[in-house]
Length: 206
Image (cartoon, rainbow, N blue to C red; front, side, top):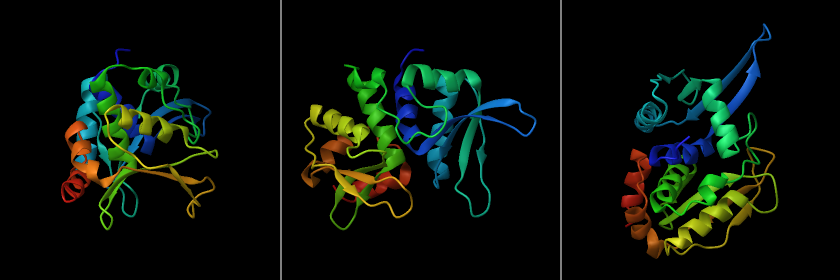
């Protein structure tokens, strides 16, 4: 499948999503792709990108006391994400950076992947005015964040070392990559951040 800017963004956004294969109570096999977010506005953006890339329309599902999500039921799309982007059909704790992203020389593809990743698994430390990426990972070094750091530095954005912390909400360590705050504006100008609430917080630190 052709790697477009919107597809690269969706692949990055899946860092806070899932690709699954499972059987129902009758033994029938199903495949699903899910994006989660407390932001309905951001899920609307994901909806539009899914429509552009895969030609399908999906609805936001929202239940009381649960994080809203959009879910695609498609064996074909799940297998594309598995075969072409190495996404496990199940638990993604060891999902590496897809080879097509890591090996890409196309700046727009890399920019969209980073934007999707940050919109899903990034934030702003408002007290210290620092942009950060975070990810739980099964290992002593977080390989996806190492790759994010390399991509950021290829755009001449300075980063700190990746920190490792105890994860009080899970069994795997939590890793954090912080951007030097003097590069906040360059980060904003370089990557097409689209999450409305996170974009607003980032702008407050420029």
